[in-house]
Length: 239
Ligand SMILES: Nc1ncnc2c1ncn2[C@@H]1O[C@H](COP(=O)(O)OP(=O)(O)OP(=O)(O)O)[C@@H](O)[C@H]1O
Image (cartoon, rainbow, N blue to C red):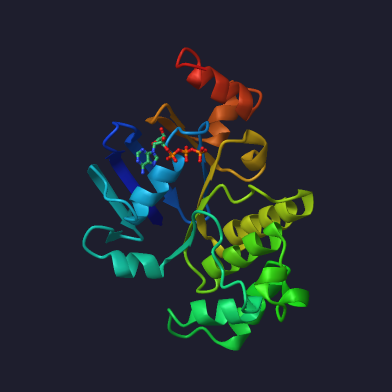
C-alpha cells in the first residue's frame, strides 16, 4: 500500500533555491534514502512534504490523505524528526514523552514504556533532559516520532551527532520498524554509509533538483555499490 506520494513537488525560496520537481513514492516497509550533498534541498523537501513551509507547486498525499486538504489525518499516520531536538530540558525524558503523547488519543503507559525501551532510554527516563548527551536527546526525539505508532516516518539526518553505538541503535530500530511493522520510512542523509545497509530505494537530489528515485536492487544490477551509482548520476552536475 502506498504511504507517501510526492508528485512534482517544488519549493522555491525568494533566492530561487530550494527543491525542484521532486517525485517519489513510499510503500509499506520501504526505506527510501533521500540522498544529496549539503544544500541540495533535502530539508526543504521534507518540510514541504509536511507543509511546514508552503510549497510552490506539486502534490503530496500520505496514506491516501491529501496534505493540502486533510493534513490533520495525514499527520496522525506520520512520525516526524526534523531539525534539532527541542525537548523541555528541565523535565525528565519520561515527562517529555508523556506531554507529547497527550497530542494523541490512546497512548497509554505501556506504549510510552515500550518506546523508551526501543530507543534504549529506560535507565535514564527519570533524569532531567538537561543531563542528557546529544545522542540521548536525539533518541528521545526519535521516541517522540514513534510513540503514536505511525505508518510513515519522515526523518531528516537522524544520525548527525550520534556516535557508533547511537547509530547502531537507530539503524537496528529502523530495520525492525520496516521489516516487522511494515512502516514506510523516508530518511535524508548526505552520507551514503549511513543509509547503504538500510535503504530499499534511493532518491537523489542535487543542486536543488530531483534526479531520480530507484530501487536499490535495480541499482545493483548495474553498479557495484551505491557510491558508484551516486557518483555516476551526479557526474557533470557540478561535483
Ligand atoms: N529559508 C530559506 N530561505 C532561503 N533559502 C533557503 C532557506 N532554507 C534553505 N534555503 C536554501 O535552499 C537550498 C536547500 O537547502 P536545504 O536546507 O533544504 O538543503 P539540505 O539538502 O537539507 O542541506 P544540508 O545537508 O546542509 O542540511 C540551499 O541552497 C539553502 O541555502
